[in-house]
Length: 289
Length: 276
Image 1 (tube, rainbow over the protein chains, first blue to last red):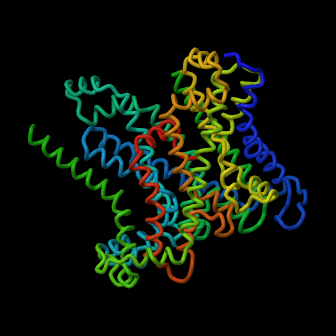
Image 2: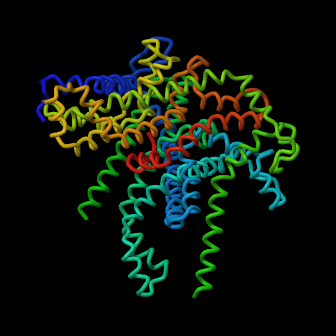
Image 3: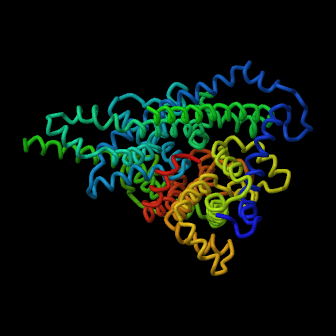
């Protein structure tokens, strides 16, 4: 449509574009600039070129953070997708009971990360936590200190994350299951296919786009985990749960190293862009296939 | 045959109960812990029901924290963000969906591109920017960086594409200005979309921990998630009954919105995906 006055579209868009410039475009430019300086927020900044990037690479810190983030994300994505899919198959039916359980699982996705983090800190507490008590009741021994052991803490945090976001996978898989035609499933059943065979040859192939969508969106989101780590482990024990965003936060607010924090944020942004690009390409090939 | 079906039903019912238990027991345990005195928590950690239920933990939390201030801050922030996002996304979405003008593709591409930039990437420079203009530790500093929702703008544009031009032209002939068209004619047509966007934005920002953590240094602009998380970090020995009482106060509003408007939140999630 032709606008009534030529200027109309511009002022309708003005507030949006203004805020986008101030809080998205300009910060990105500043981020890259900051990453070339050494600055502690107090004394004047000093230009250091690519030194921040070099030291991140050389100290091995970047690879360690990347490795921790990638492995925790992988566990979270696989875990939440598996439980989400199983629950979707179990709960894809009418009735009050199924609806109630669907809501129960999804509610965890709506509650804050802080609530969930505190709740599980208490459940997993090594001294008076109910899970530790149940564990020692059945095994006679003391429960392992899940959150204080560097070998266990990443698994514990990943498990809590899975508990929280399974509701997301569940909801998306449930909407994906609506696209599986009941008539085909019934025909397969009449032909004598078992439930497992029906799933493998009808439901699963038809769910492929949904699966891909859940996988990529959860992966990108779990790369941004922060709250649950900050509340439950503060990146520890001995950096075992220091994921990307936590590392950047620590550089800035605990070490006051703006330059290094910015360099790490630039790298992190690059990784997110790569993941999003990969997602885009996957969907392209999916659609043309 | 019939017998097998019966077994199936029992197995399924059992699985449903197990799943419900895994997801609901933590809430139940949170509520029960908040009603116990500390001595009971330490002496019999596995006792399900409090022997002497008491609201002392809640009284203590209310006494030791300026909770009214935190509730106020959190509500103003979450309502402010959700309201601002919709107020700005409507005219922008309308211009992008319905009007012809130079630079439209660039503007649209810019808005979609910002979907790729999460708060976790931009917080370092945005923090120093807000520090320069004195907005650290203020509610405006908490609201403004989230005033535009690229996704909200995009979804409103998509929804407006299906509104017939004739309806807008008729309003123009009646002498309606652009603002009247956006807020009085089109907004009511998009009611379900707007409600979903508003509620989802409200709940996510009510829950937000990252941004208030970065941007607030004292209780002046502190929000509830931050204050409750601090309950655990304070003092010697964790007083779990207090932490859980605080946690009940923090999670109840989100759960209440969920109970009242589950349908809307589900809609928002299935279109937008998890996160940001």
